[in-house]
Image (cartoon, rainbow, N blue to C red; front, side, top):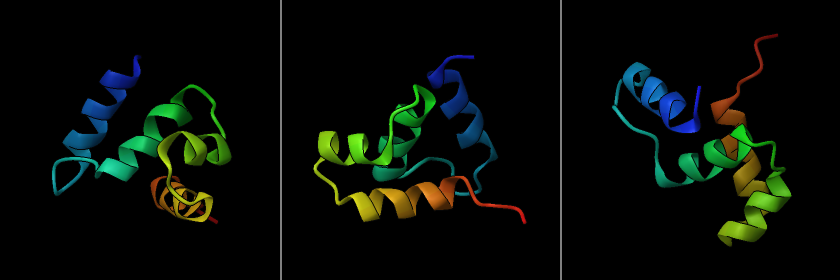
Amino acid sequence: MTVEEAIALVEQLLQRGSLTKVQEIVFRPSWTGQTYLEMAVESNYDRGHIKNVGCELWPSHR
């Protein structure tokens, strides 16, 4: 599955229909194994904000 296919699948499952800009900034590089720090540097977002968005995308089910 490509990242484009994964995004299309996720957006089908979302009630609002699409990822936000920052969610996509986190989703795409996560697909290739980038760290939150790398994403923050490339996107000019704060690492903490990127991490928070990542936590929303990949919630822990404990």
